[in-house]
Image 1 (cartoon, rainbow, N blue to C red):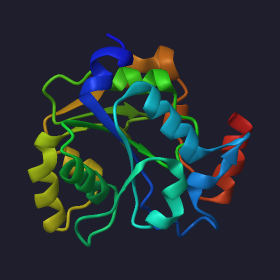
Image 2: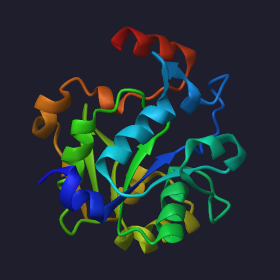
Image 3: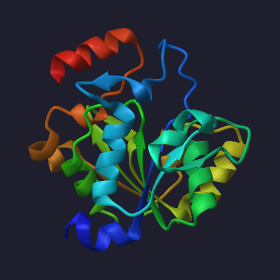
Image 4: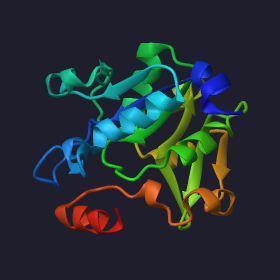
Length: 201
């Protein structure tokens, strides 16, 4: 089953762009690799795969030109969990595919593969290098109450929250032929990270 059929109708998507950006001198989503900003590349991939695409941000003036609905946090606590919760609440999306704005090498084929594993789960995420990868995955609105309760209790980490949900964890071996090097999970947190990515790209 491809993303152009069932998935396109049943899943919306969001680029999380609400980070504090404290370790990098510029907004990471606007970093260009080649001739394209990371944010634009990820939006393009998501638009090929799914229905409506959003940007989660508390600085809407920065992203007006991106032709996507902009959604701010509904509660004061910041972080990716708050962004996901806010988009699920604001849009009524049944399933929401999430990508961070600072992940420059996301493979469309892996996005498709993760999404196609949704079957009555609260979330679908991959495991790579022995670590859960929560910022490239799918979240169902059934997770809303758990995410909300966790944030209110001060437990904002997505890996922690996933431990409270019914999750389909996709093992590394399952997507080895798609992204065996785990390039899709690389994110840029510093200028040094960017140099490493430029060498990979």
